[in-house]
Length: 128
Length: 161
Image (cartoon, rainbow over all chains, first blue to last red; front, side, top):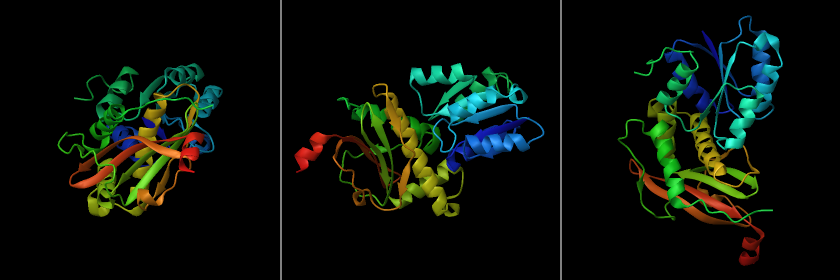
């Protein structure tokens, strides 16, 4: 399985990449929404999962989610917002735009794995 | 219009504890020990600005050794492998995480800037019309670390003049 990690922070991309690699995902990185769209256009296989930061230059996470949802080729991709934008109104906006789940920074590795298990992307108990 | 709001030290301390638990001290063996000394020295710092319903800045500052240690913990590296870029990325993300959580406690309508990192002491930065309103100051593995919150307002300008 393949996961796309989209965050302008290289440090956060490394943390997320480390977690998904441990869960047997092959990780693809992008530094913002536009770079992620460009990478997706190049890829022959669409990743099963995208972990998306909200605040990024060029194209932010919400714009990325909206664009992905408008593209039938990317319909099967599970979209998880991973962000510090923790207000209820922002969560509702992201989910309304088409995100499947929401993880608020700071998060522990265990919490992220549990969220992916909830989405059926990793087996329940992968955290133990 | 900016409204009066208070994010107090205990709110900040709770956020800081979550950051330590998640990234800097997942084993729970090296917590940030409070010193309550807002004048403790720093060698590097990062900040994010908040504008809109509330205006101000959140600043993360530490010694260079603490920044290096933070980068090593964040990126799962050995301390001697940490580069300047690793330190800069990590400091930026730490300011972003704390700033984002502070923003969530403010009235709706606040926006968060992208982080800014300066590999120089916090005292080298100037935040016009801003006043420090709260902060967490501590020692992490023998090195100073602080997270402070600054409120910007025209009143601060008048007071300073």
